[in-house]
Length: 389
Image (cartoon, rainbow, N blue to C red):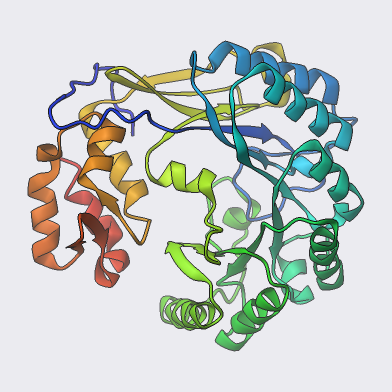
């Protein structure tokens, strides 16, 4: 998407000078076992994890790349499977970040965990984690085996109960649909079990076959067709709405007040600093928006935390990336948010917006421009309008 190194040209008229929020993403690249659908930068553990060295590398990375005087608004520890690290390692990491850098008071600090680490959850909470994201994927043992997960239904439910008993009151559950041989009834049963566990947030997303995964080389049989996927999705959306989970993004549903602030910042085209093996960053500096990434392999990252690729975004890049993110949100975006977070005047996108409004793909209400139900079904077509803006 970052096609050239041309410096961004910025129209400064009508731009709100509100500081762009900055989030911190921390990548932990190890897993006990690589899942067949996973295309993330993760590596199966084959020997002892170099925890101490990796934590030191993360803190050096942060020191070198955190923009001066910028406050970290949220922290997300993802992977891989971050919960393979010890409580001590997570505690040392978060303690150092809070001590040495500017972190917003009561910042949302999320950590991805798997159900098999219930004995560590209290320690993670004491370390400073205040939001858990549990990788459940399904409560049906048959589907869990198909997905290569190493937990079962009982272990998943117990992990959720343990987290709640410890005192975590902000819990996301990751759940998949569109699984091999899955019916509408099966998918709804998964959602019903999820709701019965009373999480504050649900990430419910479709299984997709991604390149460089085991499933891409050996595609599972009997995947639901488009018609069945649509039936599953619409039935699930209606059910979650009746249970008080408001859909605010394509795959995100939350109880009131529990939207994931870290991910919302991504979707609103805020800034984020990624540290760790393979982590990506997007940083705004005056008139320039830069993306950079770190070495993918943990060994290479430990040798050098320097960026392996750096791109300065062009106007076209910025517009398309903003739209790819903002139009996933059901509330869309405002003209002020576009100007503030891109550094571009709204006139840059007046024409494609009008075209999309005419086609019924976008709608405007109370200063918000957002995707209609039809537009969401044809989101790629909507985005094509902005490629030449």
